[in-house]
Amino acid sequence: MLTRVIRVHECGGPDVLRQETVEVPPPSVGEVLVRNCAIGLNFIDVCFRTGRYRAAIPFIPGLEGAGIVEEIGPRVEGISVGDRVGYIDPLGAYAEFLLRPAARLIKLPDSIDLRDAAAMLLKGMTAEYLLNRTYPVRAGEVVLIHSAAGGVGQILCQWAKHLGAEVIGTVGSAAKKHLAQRAGCDHIIVMDEEEFAPRVREITSGKGVPVVYDGIGATSFRGSLDCLSRLGTMVSFGNASGSIPPFDVQVLANKGSLFITRPGLASYTVSREDLETSATRLFSVVEQGAVKVEIGQCYPLADAARAHRDLEGRRLTGSNILLT
Image (cartoon, rainbow, N blue to C red; front, side):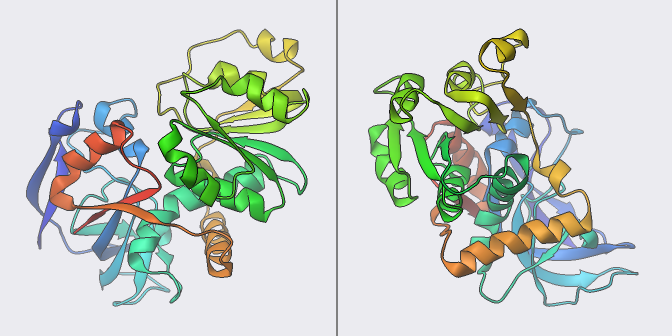
């Protein structure tokens, strides 16, 4: 079978994303052929494209998507032709048709639309492990969530509120403030108008917060440490502004014996049980209405380069998708 894909032959800017036609072989043992309906657009796609995260060249970018099972290979159980499925790995999502390991597919409930699934799975399951497992948020705690208007940020804020937390959210500009408000933030800090660390201290009467969820990276790291209370936890789960420079860990002791972790979704969904548990928790809060995932922009797959330019240019908010 021939299929359209977006492929990278050399790392670089958005223009290295080339549309090509490739052959997809029949599914082998344990594999499933999926007809993609929608593909999640995530900043990690940029990291692979630029070479910040390594992949064997040439490669098809993208980790997240949703579609219909077209064909199943030998020794596949629990999945049938016609099933609606989503996935969060491995690489290769920027395609019309693609092979997926059956063990990594997530069957979608009837209540979850395919486009919504592509927009929420990777971001929502990231929020799930951050709030429930990396640092389990408790009712009454005050938490700081950076990039509250972004795809992960909006889900994090809503879910943290559902857990009973008081949420401080940061946004890059005043134009994004309404999105953080809609996500349930109790306090909103506009980064280009004021320093966030002193404002967090002011909001918390000097105490600081027990946890910071930071997907920004280099430009927010030091300030995030300054927001933490004694024995607080710095959760650095992304680096949209660049990698965090090396630093002396003695700083953590000097600031109150802080904890720091750099988690990744892959580590929290290694087993089939973990994958299904995380997805089930996400579907539950969405079905309850506690978390609403709004799709921002929809791009044709052929416009992947434009989508990456908009993503890197901070012109996008919320969850965005590519359509086949």
